[in-house]
Length: 531
Image (cartoon, rainbow, N blue to C red; front, side, top):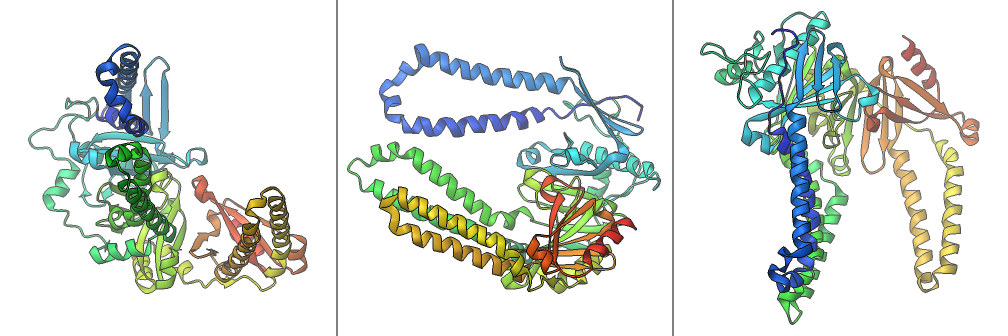
């Protein structure tokens, strides 16, 4: 491929960028229309006269302007791969050039939503080793599926060359193949730097498809595994919201059907019914999403990389360099704790940074023995940490908690006194409410004491935290950016400490609390960080 040649995103990126605006408008507009349906029917064609016509034309013009702006940006934005960088150029009025060094790329992943499946396109996502951009994907490129495979492989090959690992990339499913010639991602015409295919040329993707992807994955989940994962991922709070939402919707419908003019009553309360329906559907999706999100989950380890694929409505494919993994986490929901099941996630810059990808799965929910067997195949570097037993917080932690608990209790008493003097009609509820708050405090402290713990081993620090659910974090000392330790006066008297450690990850994953511990764990952590 020649230097400085450029190509564009697939034109469908315009639809993806503007589709959300249209959906948001419909969500805001339809409830208002239904709420005023009576007036709209009576007005009839008057909506097309005068002010109504101007409003409609204004909305239409706004959408035309938005789409036109996106078309201009698409047509003036070019992507190229040079020796040591991926270059994104935008030659609009405000010219912008984004240069991403090959060495700084931490991950290059692909995903495909339903719309992209229909069009045969695919989204390529680039992330870098940067704390400043750790909360968002640095670059998202939409290409035809074959072109996306080529682009991913080409970047990974150059990443390996930059790291001195060789000029060939052994892909997860495609074997060792040279850089392919592929068709243009832009409007079907041959793109600069990406020559059109001839009769005898084949992409890496086509080679894999013709071979039937004969290479097996190390871990492949069947229907039973997916159902098990979905069940143990259920959020009890979401189930409660779902039940209450359905009960409320049924009650509202029964009340409406009891009105003399059922049609007018339904139209008048359509907005409320629509909102209730959205809440119910949201809670329902939150309950069942893990049954379908990780459909056909597959993972394998090849050399220094882990390859992960899954998805039904959205197909994603991750390639994770092992040396970029900052930590491993075992997670248990409340249901999973009752069923003695565990799942594993990895923490690193570039995976799980978008909001919709907060959970970077490595192993789905399984019994402890099975989980460790799969971990030994996919990430044996952390198997030692998985075997470490967390030591529960010392009993003297109750003394350290006494002062903040006393402050909380005083605030509850003061709040109850103020509410009792101001809201006299609700006075009978204030005392039970204050008692409930105190009960929640006591329950939270008990659950935290049973769940939290620390183990400072020879190479790994293992932390366990939670209340009803439990999260166990395992991190190598050398991957800790920095650590802080604190003591309040009561903790100092009891010779116990707590702290925080910081990792190179997204903001949601960068800070992790170290529960109270007794002994020389602080010195072990500091020595491990300095090795």
